[in-house]
Image (tube, rainbow, N blue to C red):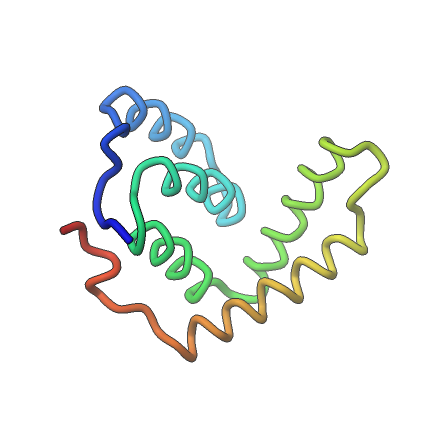
Length: 114
């Protein structure tokens, strides 16, 4: 797996995502915005570690907020889909992922570009 910045990441993309992040008011909004940003910006381990670090440090309330926001986005994509069943399922998955990440840990080297 490669590490570091993607060769396709530009200063213009950085500025665009920074403007998006400024408008985020909650943990869930930032998480939903940072996930695609990290996917586009970083390669390999750092992309995975960044998302894992956010998840590992999130509170139960923040995870519930993420699940609800993802549920709202799901509803917009598939009219009639999502809803409380989706939120409960996603919250359970997020808590399980957080527990696994906390148990495994995140190495500092995974967060630093080579």
